[in-house]
Length: 498
Ligand SMILES: *Cc1c(COP(=O)(O)O)cnc(C)c1O
Image (cartoon, rainbow, N blue to C red; front, side, top):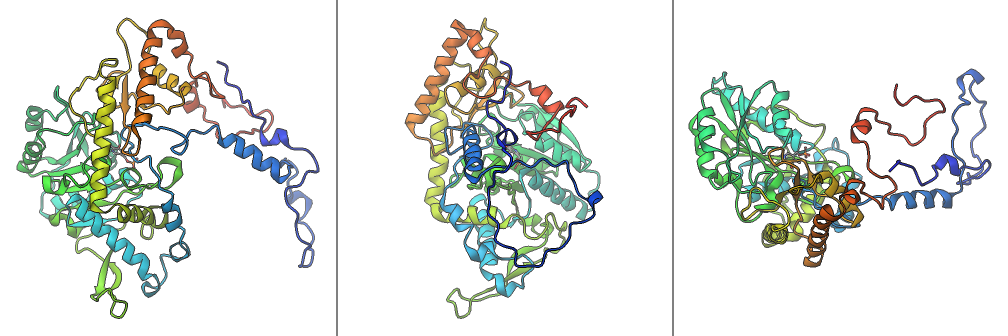
């Protein structure tokens, strides 16, 4: 399909003389305009009435698919539920109208909230210290690996420059390690989707910083040998880094710190209700075991003067500096309002039992979908999954690919799952329903995927040309990435290929 904009642009809607606002009469003396040669004459601003602008953008916004308009089964990105109460709490004036450079006596509430969030994250994942600073999961990885390296160096151990990373890992893991000038040793997965213990043992030596592991991994598999994996890494003097992006599956059930992980990042925008993607900033706090607490970034929020929370002798919260800190990782305190306040609200609202429910429903929903699709789609690592699973988007004797299936799902009004990741599954469709979806939605999604599998046999062209219901058809994704045009209006004669 030839991509066409079906909507007129705001410039095409413009009509000379239409006005959107009425300015009050000026109450200051008029001054002359700057000299003519400093004025622009080539800036064609659209002229429209207020209702035209509102309708235009409202109409465009309806072309967007969002978590608030339908099922969104992207795998390995987890949090798709953004409770609306969080929008109220993060806009409370006491949070909204404060500045991080205010004297601490005037922002005790904010500091108390950060302190409590640090404490809750420690408790949830079994760690001795937490920094809230990092701005995303990847930034948390960078922070965590910096602390691992500082730990080795502080013990006079300078030759550790290798990180062990399984082949199922998210791309940010090797990228973070690469940014620190270290090398990556890839560890294969075995046929059950676990870390291959023999390969791990062979790679472990005294040049290893440690290992970065997502558990459950991006296949949605809990590593059945996790204790052996961690023991092997520790035996050669390495530290164990947990990629906490998949923490939803474990909340209230298993604590990574108890398993022996030394460091782990949380993704508050995956597990703790901060809107994902364009909806808000990411937040990637990092938890550490006792032997790494001194290396945490500064400042942490701590209690400067003990007290009772009775209003009379309330504790005084303030900033503290860990003894061997790796330094500051982010301006001010990190993403306070959009991140910390929302996650605080979410954890407070659920309590320990509610958090455990989240994990149990996330796992139940994924296993239900997997069971419904198992006889139609090949599932290469087919055992009880955690919060997600990976199917192959291909059929014997058919040229239909995962991309065709993903695009066809849009015609059924579903957002496609993650595809072509993890890399170890050909034509991967990585499906994560999350804990908040009901059985009717899961069934409708499974029905659509089963129907699409039939279409793949009877009318493959329908899939090759999908989607059919969207304003744009199949994109040329390579061209879109190479010749990126981010604005809808271009000056006449602008050469997009330049
Ligand atoms: C999302 C994700 C990351 C990176 O987190 P960002 O917040 O997107 O930087 C790392 N590992 C896994 C498994 C993830 O799903």
